[in-house]
Image (cartoon, rainbow, N blue to C red; front, side, top):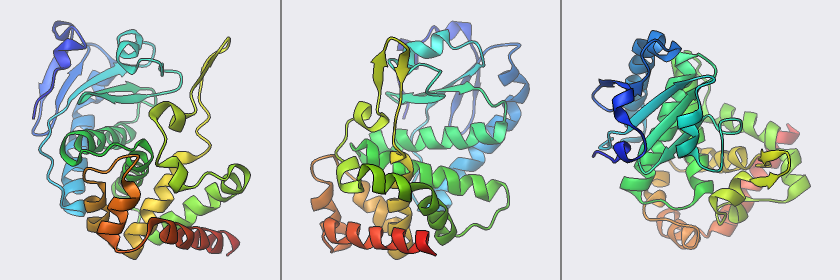
Length: 266
């Protein structure tokens, strides 16, 4: 599957490197260029890892535009409202842009995997719930990161780590998956525009959503989660959940919350 990257950028101003799963666009003489071989190596490894773990075929081939720090002008044209001060990566109509702030090729590959999974969600799974999408991609990107580092963190360890991080916000704001999964992109990211510019207050919605996905993976299996994501949106996710897991969403959400509290208290 190819996309319309040329509609977003003047491709003639970039050098191009095509791999099995990506077409990379970068600027000659950039820091990205110096690290490109490593970024490519670990991004290709990420795709192979994703397929091995989820058994979801990667039949998309995104265009990826890589920018150095301080060269975000063109990047911002794609990122739209969310400029590079609040967003370091983006996927728009299958075109991935990445702002190479950390100068860390491992982190770059993790972010590229995250955005590639979003492309898969858009074009293959036809998922239309930002809360579910971000929870799923954040979990898999984190799991891949631990894999690259040689860390043997189990799903239970990841779940416990997330619980220690989200419990106070759950109590403070009372936002649970049943609410988060109905949100639009701007609602989910808590985007506001004021005299001080663009601000975000996601209230740990990424991590709350992620913890719910990890919980489901631990209790059922990643294959059930994958099936649930297919053609699921902000209005039918509870019906689709019942179809795939044979349990009411609200019942499982309560079970998840009890598990969160149990982990936090221990």
